[in-house]
Image (cartoon, rainbow, N blue to C red):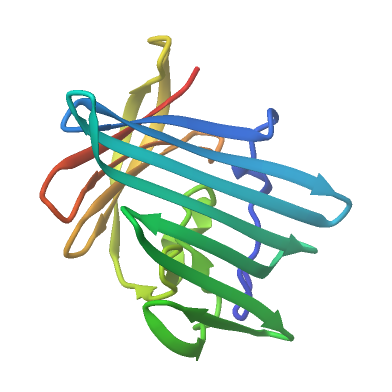
Length: 204
């Protein structure tokens, strides 16, 4: 990553063009999180789709839906569009690059110029661990103390084990991320606002 711009890491993009996860909350199925990659010359479009639903019996008591798109041009983050339905409450964020400046607006913040190297907190790009992060839900800046927790093993939905490195992102609601030896995102564990534990398992 340069001093002034967020740049892609090619090793983080799978050959299949897709990262897919099953999400559980307190070990009960919560939903899915999918990241897709489309390369067209020096332009990379990253699509993010998150769908959660919490049910009591046959009744859905909570829904969460996020759709985001990151546009990278020449390896540089050029634009972000994100819209969220958080159980009926709408949120959004937008970012556009002009020269070396990334201008951000969102439902949770006044318009601002992002710090140098800022990236969307979308997890697929391991370089986010060393960068200022933007909340994809409402555009606010996120502040984490990031540390490595060393080597680990991650099981996919077929039971196959994958070597990885675990990172702790410490904050009010901490987050753990696992990245494979090839740099690709392979797992997540986080604490939700209600204290429940959300875990991502990669779909085989």
